[in-house]
Image (cartoon, rainbow, N blue to C red):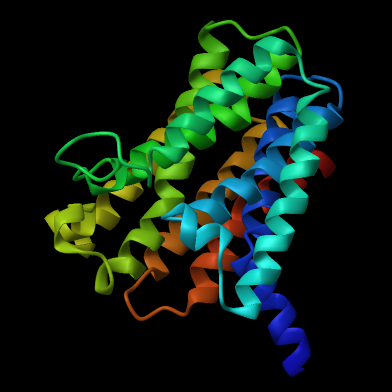
Length: 271
């Protein structure tokens, strides 16, 4: 059991689970737009996410990222380098215009921890921008990239609504993390729970969930399987927001909350 727990912790700490969540959301976009399976864009986003998140979590400086003393982190580092090579392999199979968008989102996510302003270390230090940057990156990668690579990307009503929904989805998923990290975050971050408190933050999350459902009601048939899967997704989102607290186990956020996109994808796939 101890070995299984260590393997499970490595699975979470090395961002494999986050990679699967991004893979699931990217695949969901293909299903929603009735596009064929796209191995290159799916695996590029999967491996690229693992590399990016491990860099954000463990590479606040190049020295820390490339020269680590912990054996545990060395395994994570090795996995990251392997995933980087695989991401390059699938990047070579993407269209050139898809790569330009991918580079743009990569730069945006990198600025999350890399300094870019004289008085601010990175985007994460700008009050209130933390979850917005994450939401924009996730929405761009999981919606824009598959559509661009399939040559169907255009800012029509459907694409805009799906993008708004995806931003809302990630914002909602970030709320349990914001609440859980309240005891660790520096006061200067200006996160939503820090500024308005946990109770009001949850109310805003519920409002986002309602808006998410309204958009779905607007763009799909009420009795379609997509609509019912979205209602199920919204119920799960409401439950995790309701359950969110400072004292929650890391498995609640790192596994259960991040499993919601995977559950939604499986519902879309099999229903």
